[in-house]
Image (cartoon, rainbow, N blue to C red; front, side):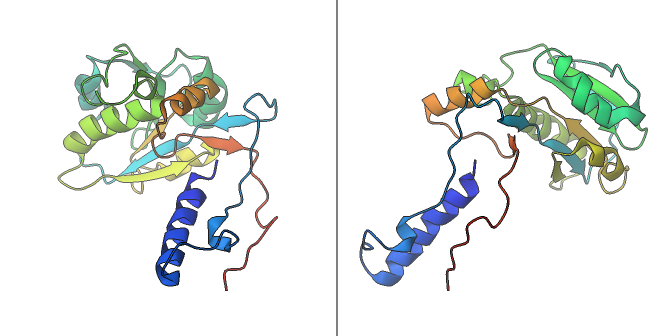
Length: 225
């Protein structure tokens, strides 16, 4: 965890070297970055999904979405009612087949389930990526559902608004049909997927994981001024 802090540290090191005019001394603070290592086999390591909130959609209609994705997805109403979004995200979605997404329609307050039936859906869209990357739910969601379906069909010529939450209790309240029109719920990214991407030297798509528990903020502070 902490890739944002790592890339920020690299940029800080680069700027510090530019200001110094040459390679920094080895003990210069900009050469060092604090991070935490946790064993992948640690029983306490939990990976939670980060659910998506979509706003700025023009004339979103579940029937139109179904027609657009039916060659690649089975679409049906979820096995629980729309007023149980948090329960579905926590207890039901994880028991569904792999590559299953929940969809909450903020206008109708209905909950749907989309299950992938074309496992090679990203083969042409992301041919340069490894198979492990193309099998990630977050990659399928971003590169197919968002980029190829939601944006062109419901974007209205503008970039759709994307929000994120790892707390399913917040989702139904935020997806009210106004601020956000649609909520997309994901299963957790499996631990072995992280290991496979590491072997290929690939970076996961944005907001792929939410590691829990989080380290307490402020355990160590390094003053920059």
